[in-house]
Image (cartoon, rainbow, N blue to C red; front, side):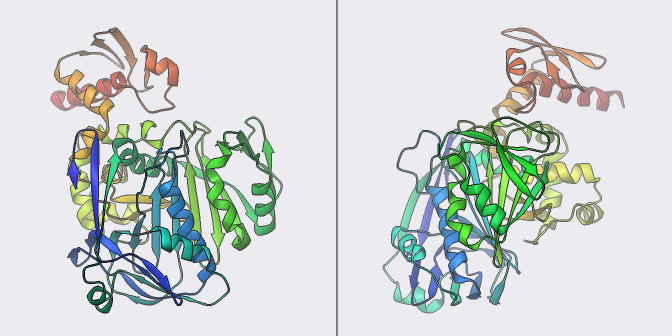
Length: 446
């Protein structure tokens, strides 16, 4: 990967294109990390998927999100999905080009050989997309994640290469969405017929904003907020749920526990798998602008703790905080902050259904974290320049725009940015600077 201050470039090199022929789906892989070490074309799984049609439709839905820019659509985005094999399931993930929609398909019933555990990119090309759209019936589908030796031999000279820009907005979204999702609660669970009826009742205008409000065993559409409701801003952003409705067993809707954000997540339970969509508060707001990771990244211990916790991860289906705390000797709070740091490097995600983190490895370096969070970089610069003066639980931060007064614990500030967002997009740089300075002051005193 070639890296810059504002954009990275992901270079894919596949042994050949992914294909679907005679009931055999072969997904070509490009790079990645496995238990056996770094691999050029890792092989993770070979076996049967018991439910071919929903699996094909779910994979196509994940690929559709990876190709889509929901805000100000324009062509040219060709990002490939990521797949993680953790031994008893496959997780296919993608993120929209605009950074506002995250998709994941969890394939839960594997019948075959797990050859290794790890994460890689998979090729989803045009002909494969057309073939996936034609899959039907109840026959099982043979799936291979990674080329077998015979395939590599027969595809000699058929290397597929792609170079794809990865904007920082997109990279930061993977970190933000897992932190935001960890603060969601289950708000509603609908049986299949109710789920179909509700989703089909959503306004057809792609930019419409509605609230899904629990009503007995059902959901109703409201034009404004209501107790227990979950906001969906830009109803067109859940379009990839619609082709899956014919397989839907249940719909679960998740939203912030304290109602502080208008983001939410939508999960369809399918035969042997789950499809999850998380959407940002507004179509024009990607998850990268939410600032949810900043509080944890600003702690002095986070980077070092992340090294310790990271060495304990082993591509587990779920990451248990208590077990990591015992093994690392860290508190639960420090383990959680370390997971945020690891999430910023693409190394953990969050599963709402399991209410737990999971281990995966995306191809980004930890050194990018500071570059991907300019507010945190600016806050540290203010501290280093001596711009912060502490006064008990308050602080004055001197900037070119004037003196900003901060209440450290409350996280309030007199700057225009804070008045615009009121903490809904994370702390401003002045609050971060005051909190960093307060910790330094305590350490010096001790």
